[in-house]
Picture 1 (tube, one colour):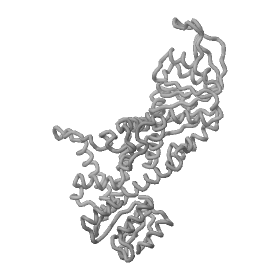
Picture 2 (tube, helix red, strand yellow):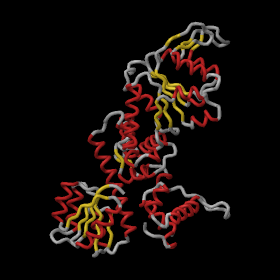
Picture 3 (cartoon, one colour):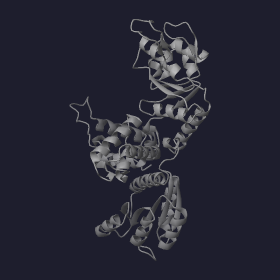
Picture 4 (cartoon, one colour):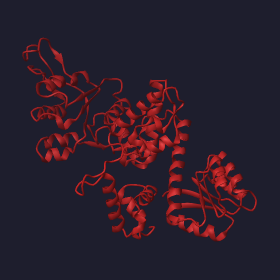
Length: 454
């Protein structure tokens, strides 16, 4: 866990125990023994989450809850005097959760981590409302990982002749990045030309890239300028570069080295000033090892490689920022439909693994806005069933075909056993949050195997 928490309790022993526990989990801890002290601390320090006892010497916990909630705080009530009516009142007043003492530390840990996630998402939404446009590079995300990618893009853009190789899974935004590099570069006034090397083969792709002279082949009725000529003084983006046929690869290598080429059927060298950006969604080094892609061409393209991580490897804040910016863009493009995401819908979006990456996220949001009609806010009901957890794996027909659920239960059990029940290390290895792991332990009944809280 990362972030800050405000602990409010008039019992010094409770404050000391909880402070020690959360500090061990790398949280910054603030402490208060009265409601007024807590309110002042919140206003000055703005912690991510407040954990508030219901009975305080000056204010009631519910009064403090309402005060903090109006200020935008994410509040969890923890009390030794819990009852159902009070719990209902607390939740209606804005409490994130209502826990009673003594509390299981594993459960408290999961509740606090979930509250921290919601607090982070609130900050993202607030930031984007204050600066809805931002720079093109801000659209990548605010995490250190994506800021480094943004810095690489900016450096590549300013080095206007440098060849760039974009790497990443399908749908991670390589085409968008190629356009951004062009549009923030000194070449922005000239053409940006995109070619997908997987959709054309052989002579057709060669003709598209380099053009042909009249009569060069049967269907060459007139002279045709190639896209390298069209992109002169601008940028040409060669997508799916590893799908280029081996016979055409040495011709591309020659253009990269000499900045000149001949049309098909031509004898005259045509000089061009073009920046080349190439992209691959496959392992290009494996393609070189398997001798389907020329090694010398790879090295000529790999002058400035930029790798775009898939959404499942980006932070939740990055995914949230991306979703909100896509929604904002869709709202400008198609005004009818929700302009906002509900907190619960945003939570579902950041927790999903997105096998189709940015492309899938955009499609889900566009479809959601259509389904929502004239609603002001896009809600979970407008999202696909797989995001809402509606798709369940089928039951196995026999022991050799276990369900995905059973495979997950077995795998989590093995990982927990390997780390001797340490949930923090197990969650890191599994690539999920401690809160998610805690929920799965409860769901699959793994507590019965005597695991430590970790």
